[in-house]
Length: 71
Image (cartoon, rainbow, N blue to C red; front, side, top):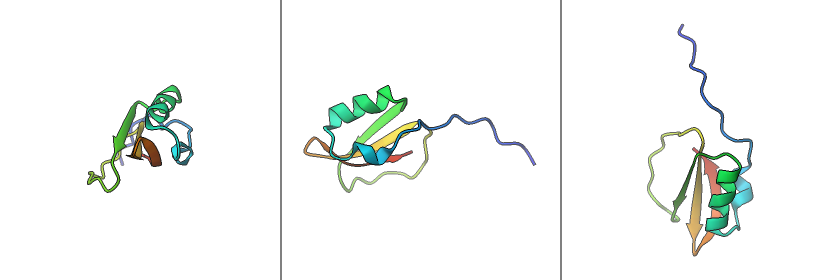
């Protein structure tokens, strides 16, 4: 069996902690904590399910983060 490549790790940060924050402040905070990509999405957005290491997804409505998740 071929060994798995040495993949980078996601930052040690809780995506749930971004709920309730202003979207711009949340994105800046995420980058400060090591997320390489921060994607903001409106509620109900249709997205693909590929997982991207280092990406934080933020669901945003009226400038406020409703929830956050990795990938």
